[in-house]
Image (cartoon, rainbow over all chains, first blue to last red; front, side):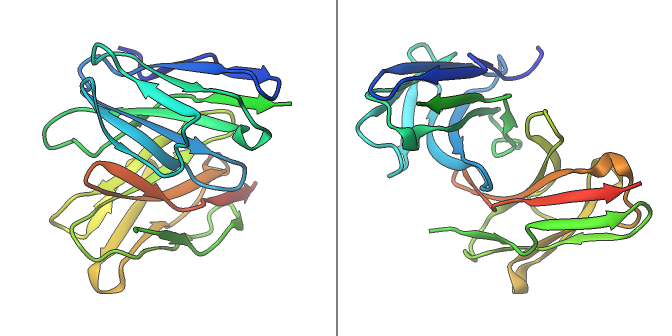
Amino acid sequence: DTGVSQDPRHKITKRGQNVTFRCDPISEHNRLYWYRQTLGQGPEFLTYFQNEAQLEKSRLLSDRFSAERPKGSFSTLEIQRTEQGDSAMYLCASSQPGLELHEQYFGPGTRLTVT
Amino acid sequence: AQSVSQHNHHVILSEAASLELGCNYSYGGTVNLFWYVQYPGQHLQLLLKYFSGDPLVKGIKGFEAEFIKSKFSFNLRKPSVQWSDTAEYFCAVNEAGKSTFGDGTTLTVKP
């Protein structure tokens, strides 16, 4: 396995459009996390899944944001009616069960630019 | 809510200098602590971690960190930096699954 992958790597969209990002975690990892990172800041937690169950959502995740992990494998993050403030790097991470539960492996991110 | 403070936004060192990056967190319960590194053009990579036991933990590339519970600190150290250590360094605290990150410290090592 080559690690966490994300698609696309870059997305430019016009304000008001909907966008969807995909994350494929490391295959045996049952937890999957989404973070957002803006310039000059560290990643901020958005939400996470254990298998297909979404266990926690940050208050940063407005009604325009929705995440799914329908079969407990890959996940999608959708942003509806994008705003310029949504421009950021969206990071996905995964972790495995057991003692290393909290050790998260990060993907390369999807950079979103809203014009 | 948990918060993480990294004291230095940008550190500039010459090669062979010693490094110490500060990290403090706010919550005093059971936490797992991490340092991540992001080299230019690459994604976040785990540098080292503390879960329990010996408070002095060693990571990759000669880095180490010391957990001081009474000070809520987890400072990163390296005795002699190299030009290839130029990167951004993030401290993170994990509790109940989700991680809270500091805003990062950019380290520039001059050859």
